[in-house]
Image (cartoon, rainbow, N blue to C red; front, side):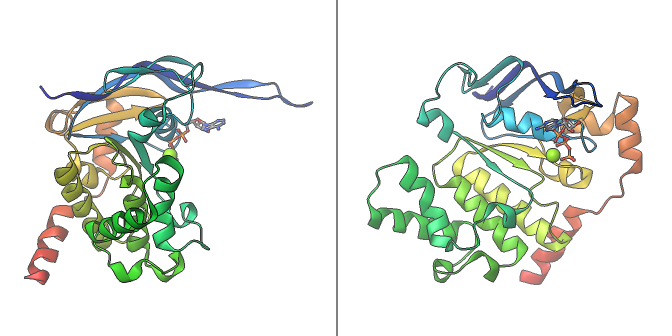
Length: 275
Ligand SMILES: Nc1ncnc2c1ncn2[C@@H]1O[C@H](COP(=O)(O)OP(=O)(O)OP(=O)(O)O)[C@@H](O)[C@H]1O
Ligand SMILES: [Mg+2]
């Protein structure tokens, strides 16, 4: 068995919503005790309907929000962001890519600066080398060195998502959390970005937590699958296990209801076009 990069033990997140004159305060149990383990170089896909707690779990894994209870371990090391200041090396190990790259890219910042920024903030790598690394990363994600001085609005959605992925990789993370990274893209572009993610995973030995509501995407990229329902993991196992014999009623309904846009066939078509 490979090294475990990510583990959660019964991780919980409640949100307390303040009351007002007319409303009582209430607590939302967004994540109700989820345990998972992801090995190095593997992809765990998390699926479930809107509001089931996927992004909340992602924010705890990326050390943005503290859990209400339970434990988070990154490379076997316990992380407690509620009570201790995290070492920068630990933070760097986990990066996140969001659904909408436009929202997360500053429109006034040139792409080269977007990519160099994490290096400026987190390292003392000299300017020349920063530039060099950013250029290299551009080509790694399928863009071009001539894009270095362009602004985000000059790119397509797929290209912008490539930029967001490049930025996430600048600090050599171990784990990438991808929260619906291709949901806003056209189908053919989705396939290209998924292929890119696969290539980068192989090249850098990356571990992925991939959040999606699209089962055809999940089937294509996942090693393991977790199905969440109202804050709980109602299904968790290898992709083949979960797809071939879904146990929970919710999963059965989910599988029955989702149309299959077949990413595999899109990939084949692209390969034929390129040939
Ligand atoms: N900052 C917050 N304050 C209060 N409640 C929140 C907050 N963030 C999320 N919630 C609630 O927690 C629950 C889980 O939300 P979450 O965003 O994790 O769902 P999700 O599975 O990512 O949904 P989607 O597929 O729509 O992105 C929801 O009921 C949501 O309203
Ligand atoms: Mg979400």
